[in-house]
Image 1 (cartoon, rainbow, N blue to C red):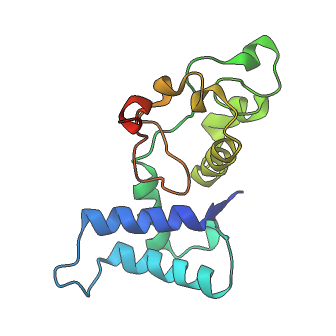
Image 2: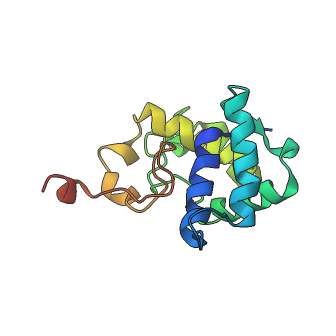
Length: 154
């Protein structure tokens, strides 16, 4: 089973903070506190990932609520694995990842998203970026939407 990256924990915290802002600037909602405890331990022990099964139930539930707001698959409907490629030119997933996607856990899917985003070689990140607009952003900022190239140039 894949682990949850610290940037996903951080994005989930920020999503919950935006959804349930502190009424007094000091207190945080239960979800932020649960995720914050996991985040703090990861920072303290210099860990980039935590095991999903080892997370406290409240933190895992809060993370899954954030995860449910993200696009599921990186597919842009140009699948070269059907033509025999080992890695899809459209989305960047391997043939095995494309085949297993429906059975993968949320943390396994996020690990795949992180890898293809960091590689940035799939057509979804260049040639056909407009098809992917509004899809899952980079793992460094997973709670924001992609900016269209035309808007970024202005």
